[in-house]
Image (tube, rainbow, N blue to C red; front, side, top):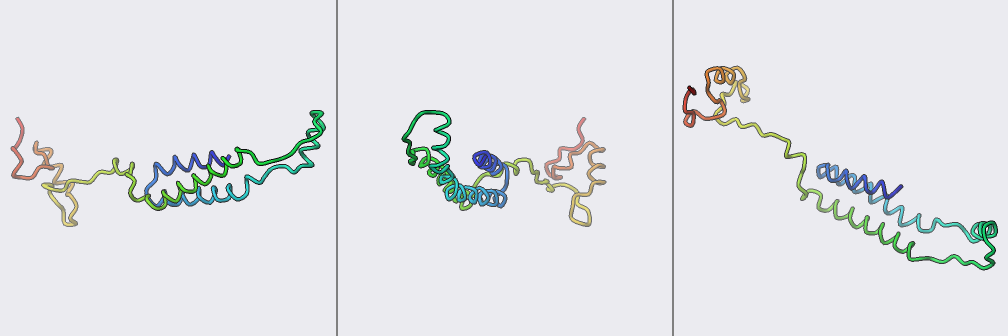
Amino acid sequence: MLGVAVLAGSLLMLTLRATGRRIVAVVVGVISILAVIFLPWQRPDSDEVFTELRKTSLASSYQLHATGGSIGYVVSWLAVLAGTVLVVRYANRWPQRAARFERTPTRQGMPLGPDGEPDAAEIWKAIDAGQDPTQSQEQDPGPRA
């Protein structure tokens, strides 16, 4: 379940801006710290294991010991923690995917109103007259035939 949370956080970081990335990275970092501290040691004690073994097999001797899986688990969560530190540090350098949908209005050559914004009525009048209101008057070739 925690792996799904890390994967969802990673995908979310790809779509957010720098501040959102940092916030999600901190949350994923807290999850990884808690996972490194608590989850590798969440294993059954010897009495529970012996009780289950007596129910299913005839094995009389059994020992619990750390395996490579536990070490790999801790290393993977430490890698997630290192990744979140990198995201928090360098989140402002990532390209912003949402910025490609933003449009910057071109006001050069457009008739402006008293508030400094393009005057919609004048723009429509220019369009009705067959002129391109986005071109400046020097570039305007005149009405089209």
